[in-house]
Image (cartoon, rainbow, N blue to C red; front, side, top):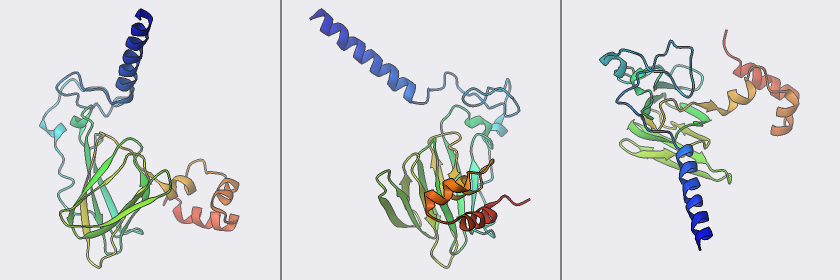
Length: 217
């Protein structure tokens, strides 16, 4: 019985340790305003010695962003790199504006779940599960949709008027990997023979896509 009790206690203890390791740690102080100029990074930014209200303020989401680009959308981030006071707080926002027909193309956030609130307009949104199932819906002004952490997702404005959302993340810096540029515009480049086999297309098609997605100089 003593051996069983000991094993049970060890199992519970290990479970608690692994659970603690798997989650972001709570902040051990009131604030830790990010020192963005520091070259030392462990898992975030070190704290500045002094701070003021400006470190907790950002006005960049107040106005629509310019959407006169190829995709017809613009993401304006309000993360720790824009608001140093978010450091260690595990939260951030973005504003996404869409021209008529605009697309926020398939992408993932490796470090955060995302929830969007429609400011105005209508969007077709969706995410794809690891079982390759598309979960999609049309959302309107005042409505909310959630994209689970790490899953590929998108938003498309199929209406003939602009649209806009506010996105919230449970990370100070959620990260974004856009699928097409990640594969076709990486540096150094992903080998053509990997892409031709993965997408079942020819080398000419791969080169054409790479040329279109290459960073503008």
